[in-house]
Length: 326
Image: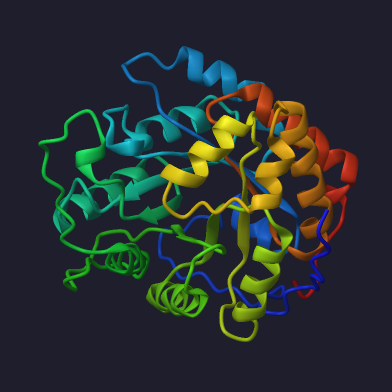
């Protein structure tokens, strides 16, 4: 295990986050807990590849009452799946968990994006993660054309405008929205200064929180938080994706943009299985847990893997502490 030298991130404190909205409803539970300094846990799931939701709802029931929110991806890897807004609404209606729906700039122009956002607000889905989206050439419709009329910063501006009670063109709305606007960032980026500068732009555009790509080395978190200090004042949930084999780890490291798995982690996984991956996850959580706002679990649609990570979090007592000044 490598020593990280992590210390509390001073860039966020209770009361430093201000959300602007005109929907007239209470703050989303996730944002309320983040403001209170709680250690928060979110989990990412993919919508079904079809019209049936029973299996997905049943999987989420296995852990829904133990997490703060579930992220619902937007046609991940550019493969056709159910609308994330629809599934997010069904998860909330089922009484399981608060949802965060992903919205990408890949498939809609600025009119369509704003219409989707208003539709989500009307269904009571009030957490968004603004993303670019995977290129269509990677998916099951490789000849499809991406729209990309705006980038992620432009999408954040759209959502922030709706929160102010108007469209991005300035047309007043009959009722505004109350979105908690999330964005993505990468602590393992090759150019950390550029990554933090980009995150600053997202915050200036209206982002309220961030979720990261999976991290595997506490030093990645340490270096990132050192760059953030005094510059970025939103809570950040760090990505956790347990490794299940050396082959899986090597494939992630080689083929997934933004994921950097250090050599010492790959060496640990040689000839090992998921049990070793969970040990590495436990070591990571023990090291970074006291110094971050929470974690975002990438379970690869395995409820069992989610439960295993949640058990680790409980064993470490991370949910029972309050982060003041983190």
